[in-house]
Structure formats: C-alpha cells, structure tokens
Image (cartoon, rainbow, N blue to C red; front, top):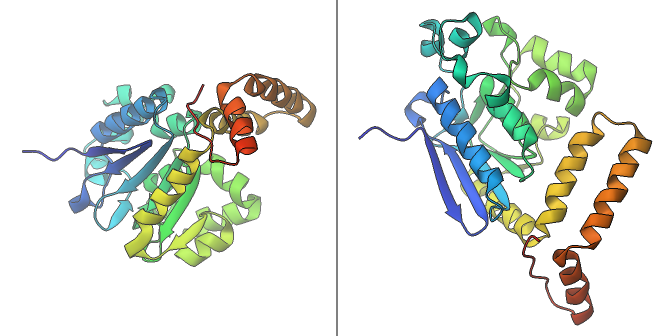
Length: 266
C-alpha cells in the first residue's frame, strides 16, 4: 500500500501534521502540497484544535520541492510555467499563505534538514523548535531560484535587511545555534527530546484561553501593516469583545477561587 505523504495525529487539543516521504527527505510534491494545505485548513476550522505541530518523518524536516518532479515540468515549476498543476499553486492555495492566515498556533518542529521550500515552510510557523542535529539550508541562490514561498517576506522582518541578504545571497548552511542566535528559532532541543518539548509547549498553549490566542494571532498579522493608532483601535475593540466571553469570566472566577481555569473557547 502506498504511504500517505501527509500524516495527521490528534492528541487532546493538539494536532500533529507530519510530512511523510522519509526516503526522499520529505521532498514536497504537488500532491503533498494539496494534502498539506487541506490538513492545515481543516485544523484551523476545527475549534477543538488549540495547537498544531508541523514536522517531518525520518531524518529531515523537508528538503524542499521535489526536483525530479520539477525537472519533468510538474509541481510548482510546471504550474508557474503553465505546464500543469496550477490548481495547487493559486495564491489562495499556497500552504505558506494558509499558514500565515491561520488563527491556530503552529509550532514548526525542525527534526532535520530544512532546505528551500522546507525552510520557507518552517518560517511560516509561529514558533520553531529545532533539533541539535538539524540545520537550515537557504541555498536558493545556489539553485538559481529565490525563496518563493514566504522567505522574501519573512527573512527581512525576522532578521533585518542586511542579515536577510547575507543569509539568502551567500546561501551558507545555518547550524541550530546560529539559527537561535539569529532569532530564526525559539529553542535548540536535543534530538531525543524534541517532540516531547514540542508537546509541552502545545499543552501550555492549549491550557490558555483559545479565543485570546486566536485574537493575538489576528492582531499580530494586522499589526504588520497598520500604523500604531489604527492598530490600537482594533486592539481596544478586541479586548472589549473578549471581556464579554465566557473564557474571560472563567479566568476571573478561577483567579478568585485560586484554581486553574478550564477554558471552553467561547
């Protein structure tokens, strides 16, 4: 039986999405992109999912787009040249666009090499944990391409202009500790405890008020394109709405009763 290229596993409020082509270092095909995009959208639509883990099977996170498929005129190369597969690559259906639109927090668990599209995919996650045995490979220029799925947007914002140019134009591998120093990842974790740490982070997120978490993500997104005064008005309206929620009432009651709150997401 053919392996499913995208695996999903649910544990409580946490959904784990795994890129599952370990023999190909999880190189992305057009079919995988379609399945991944569906999995991400389904997770965001399911309000019982409070955190998502995105990771890879085997020894890689994602080695990038499948070059064999690209060389044959398929995949994203074919879509952009009009040779096929375009239904997977409209702006609305690009996975990294979906990631940026999601209100559910996504933690990228970088278990191994993240190269090309895989690096862009990792950058699209809200937080990133990286194995001490992994590495980031921004080798776009060496392949005659650009960070086509988010890197040109994320890198200057995460690193500043000069560092973004250094990383993308030199194309040198980035070690876990370098990635941490640059601010590209949140934490370097020993490989054997990487997933346990990711689950701990997700459990902490899931124990907090989901309405507030989702609203934080929306406001972070909007804040990237708003002036401070306009953004402050949106924040005020959001806070007033959250004050009316059952979750806020539960938080206040739990504080008074000196117990942990039990949030329902409404």
